[in-house]
Image 1 (cartoon, rainbow, N blue to C red):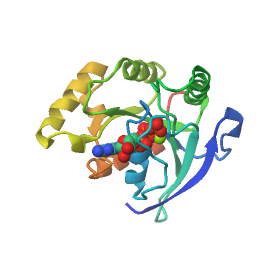
Image 2 (spheres, protein in one colour; image 1 turned 90 degrees about the horizontal axis):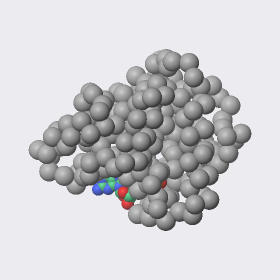
Image 3 (cartoon, rainbow, N blue to C red; image 1 turned 45 degrees about the vertical axis):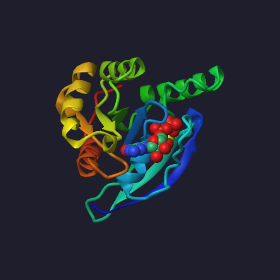
Image 4 (cartoon, rainbow, N blue to C red; image 1 turned 60 degrees about the vertical axis):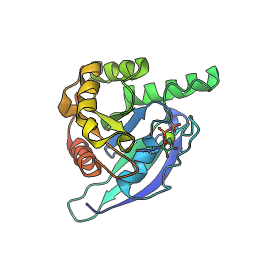
Length: 204
Ligand SMILES: Nc1nc2c(ncn2[C@@H]2O[C@H](COP(=O)(O)OP(=O)(O)OP(=O)(O)O)[C@@H](O)[C@H]2O)c(=O)[nH]1
Ligand SMILES: [Mg+2]
């Protein structure tokens, strides 16, 4: 599908959130897992979201406006978020990001879906479990995306996804594999995102 993607704004405090009433799809996951890279591969624009080898790159909620081409295409926001589990961050800044992310996930009425990104090479960690349970308990529409699939032998990927689904107690249908390097899973992820933008969600 053809789209245009542009950076809109960085949000450090809730009162800076955009006022447009557009559907939003957010990405969460451990620091350095590959959330920003996923956005770049998804929209086909290297360097749109800043990525880094050093954990803690993304420190604000970063808004990207996605506009599908064609008359039926409705615009929406992809929202990159700071990662969790970044041990080297100071307590103060960690608490600040955590608070921002929590408040955002708790109160944003136009949030239509959350991609929880995990590293397919490792089983979900305690913080991944905590986030996944929290998303479920709060009625979010969410998908588990196992990224860095290019680092695993192809034949092992389905089995790894099964283990991830079991470990997080989610349906296998609510998981998928992805690679920002090879583009594996890109079309499937778009499909989920487009569906999510038009879905309704239970009242907050
Ligand atoms: N091989 C491989 N490397 C990846 C993939 N996705 C991301 N990376 C690498 O992983 C590192 C972290 O990627 P980012 O996209 O910055 O991770 P992030 O989750 O946004 O990190 P924070 O902003 O710190 O939370 C970078 O060095 C990327 O090049 C992938 O699918 N395959
Ligand atoms: Mg990032």
